Image 1 (tube, rainbow, N blue to C red):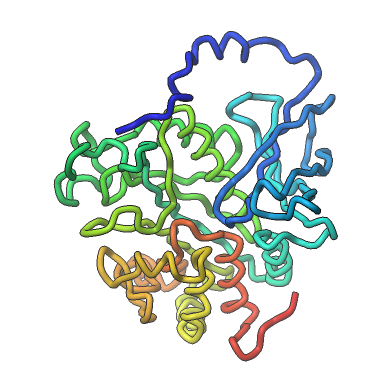
Image 2 (image 1 turned 90 degrees about the vertical axis):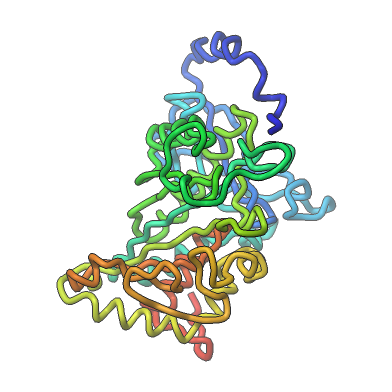
Length: 371
């Protein structure tokens, strides 16, 4: 495996400088989604006060021609602070702030899925939509090989790795535990983590989050993951099928409920929502990865705990279905369901928006809803 040179810099020397007092000034790191719809960018500004809420953080700008978001002749883009978190790298009182991107004309950038998602969530707020998203990812060396895999060959077949322990079964746990702690410090609603079925593949869960918070917290959790991986010289990829062959892909299973689904008798509302989803399968597939289904087509094959990308299926405790109703929910008669179709590299704003449009706002392909 190959590790990035930057991770080999002396971290003890770094700590000498990080312990220096910073007076009354505060570092605020602005984080945004770039023009790929998958990549994250950041830059830092000094404020002479500690912001107490996101409204205390000023708008900023950046060169969109260097982030696939503008032409050089008209490159300034606006950063609009939306959600503030604590900074686990520079520590209190420093902040991280997730931002929306607006173009020169103050209209949302093409990969700004947050703006319409926020409007949809506001429209559906009386239903109290809750989400929990399970982010799978794969740790890779900078040589493009999964971290910890043999240089010339492959590890043993899948079986001992899921939730595994032991140096022969688990690769990169230090990264996972550091990321977990960074999320807790930052205020990200991380719910748990586990080793996944393919060696070097992991998952963390974020939620439950209501409405727009789901996208905000998952995007910041992704930023923290990439930033932690920097320190270890390893890359975290969200590719839905990073290794071809008899290996599991990576998804972002999305758990969802409304208030009426969570109450006794809610199973009938779950079944009603699933019926609505069944009629818009193709529409949702296009929304569930940044390339309109092209990435997910490598993963949703009907094998390796997936449904076929061409078919819509639902079942109790069935991990080979599009929609899984947990067994406990089936027994209790209320709760939530899991949409297993979103790819690991999905935009959570787009995913949660389309689920709410279909199940709460009753949007159909023939009758789109303007927000």
